[in-house]
Length: 167
Image 1 (tube, rainbow, N blue to C red):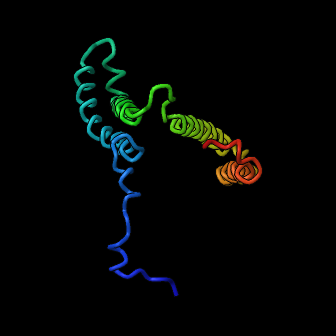
Image 2: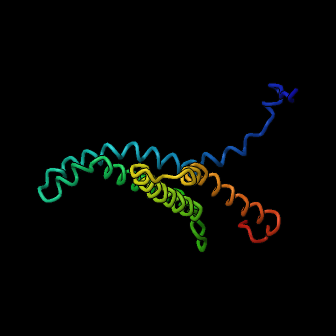
């Protein structure tokens, strides 16, 4: 049976550890501004592109790709504002706190590009009848294999080379 915490003990707990999460220059605020800003800006950019769609030179292209362009512009603008907010408390001489976000964005972009290349290759191979069981196995286990390999490298460093890890 698990240990239960009585209500009177909960009242005595210090919730100060939660306070930093609600500050505007922290990661939760970055996520909120990015997602909230995207939701607010996307309809505005959609309307703006609707007006720009009347321009004869670029109109047909904008009309055809209006949703994608509006999404890109809204998310880029919201993310730029959120990054400024995230880095608003940097001390002089320190690098920004966005390196981990940069790595995340690069890896996610690679994931999307490689996934799209794989999906197109699979569709081409399936339609021609040349998609093998090995390719099906690779497609179903690639994500887990990359995650396992990454985790193994991190854990090796954690146990055997802790001085090389970031502080």
